[in-house]
Amino acid sequence: MTTVKSYAAQSAEKPLAPFQLNRREPGADDVEIKILYCGVCHSDIHTARNEWGGTMYPVVPGHEIVGKVTRVGQNVSRFKIGDTVGVGCFVDSCGHCQNCEEHLEQYCENGSSQTYNSHLQDKKTITYGGYSSHIVVTQKFVLSVSDKLPLEKVAPLLCAGITTYSPLKHWNVKAGDKVAVVGLGGLGHMAVKIAASMGAEVTVLSRSKSKEKDAQELGAHHFELTTEKENMDRLKSSFNFIIDTVSAEHDYNDYLALLRTNGVMVLLGVPPTPSAVSASRLIGGRRSLVGSLVGGIKETQEMLDYCAEHNITSDIELINIDQINEAYERTLTGDVHYRFVIDMASLN
Image (cartoon, rainbow, N blue to C red; front, side, top):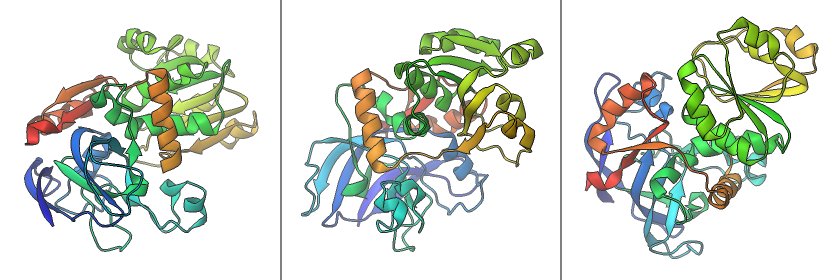
């Protein structure tokens, strides 16, 4: 075991604070990574505060990790010391179910091992995330990161980037498609960038007029206020795809009406309560309401390569680890454009 520095929540009511964490020594197939940057995801807050239930304290959040390889096991062939690498939302899976065999490890039928607040495949060892100086991960779940882009801006791609890239790629969004993005936050701003890079005509749907300038700068072609009934009426049957990133309660039926025949609305946000959906909204236009998680390892690597090729990164605010509790509060009020990223050098 190696003792490393980290920040952890000890209970739902307590702020995150310094914590001494034991990491395993690298095994034959393991890669040890010195963490340079770790993004702050809204799910970090939900977990730290046990808002989804099931938090195992102490919990060390963080699943948007970029760093440098410091040690490798004897069987590791894909990475060497000094390589720039990333780790996303999960660090292992069973490897033998149908989904794993189809490179869909995020949907592992036996349960993937999440990067934090989860168990490794032994179903006993608890995982601890990227709010720490180092992490040890089996090589199959380590990703190559290009040095062409600013690494601090690459970190959120490991969650926000792949969460939006995966459905756009799966449903084959292409040049000429009309795509609406609901919500312009950490996920939404990445959806705009990636959809626009694919040649889609992108519209941001928002309740806040103040987001219009940002939407245009991010690459959106149009901006529409959803609080105006005449706008929603005018937009009926307008879009091939809607990417809904909102986790607050809202009426899906209002947005389903904006889809063309055969249109698809993809849910990425997770509201706290179930939503009622009118069957007529779906039947009337052969519309689809679907959900999507992150991508598998193969697709995540594809996304990282795509973003490096197209110069796509996240818009971030860089913070020190001792600012994490303030960052959580600012995230909850929407006071971040559009992702906080921790400079882990401040932990050393």
